[in-house]
Image 1: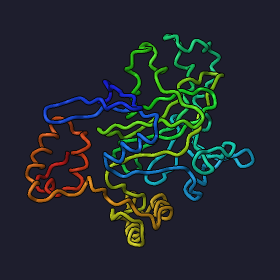
Image 2: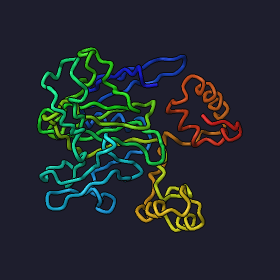
Image 3: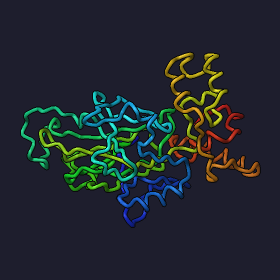
Length: 334
């Protein structure tokens, strides 16, 4: 559904929308102003996650330094799964010279990018015929560990070498349809260096987001380090280890694990989730997702049935269906 994405770049400009009869859906918007990005999040509701990789327990296996090398294929923190954008790479968190903007640690792919060392001639970066093997595409990928929909993803980036980045939402480059260099979509993106902020908001929702560096080429890598992320997800974030879905991880969840009632019954992975997140709670449901008064229920049910026909991924109906009980009466799922 993302093949024909349009994009809006936002500093002090409005949001571009596509209008359907009675409804409006925003296109993805890229922000390079963090204050504006956060202000917009405050208007759309949902659960906001801040990640700066400082939790020594959660990120322990990923800690990396010259004297103590380490990395992990993936890490789940605050219900978000973090990986490299390449399946064969790991992720690492390190002090990167002690210059991380929020705390001590930043995150990066290890190794950086594809590291193919192909030996190809890769200097003509704007040549539309340049082989794809030339591009290193250093980056990270995130998704909800529970399959929840995401609506925003942004953070601070340091490349120390005039890096250029883009976002891929559900695998599709949101910059790919711009017209300044249409024959070479890998070059579309936003400049990011010296811990500059770059973020994206898409109120229709997405399941995966990749942050990808664009300028690095074979033998000429542009290494990307990242910190101070903000992620917006739908109303209630289900925590790993919360096997009874009541918003916290406590003794009752351990009893469920003992009785074989966790996602993978009696598995060590589920037990590890419970141990890691014991005592954690989900944020309260924001006011924008409050259950409607009964007087307005019939109207909203009718709107939801109509909305499901025109766009099943609409953010409103996805979250409304999750929290409003009359859909159980209808026996339907949007």
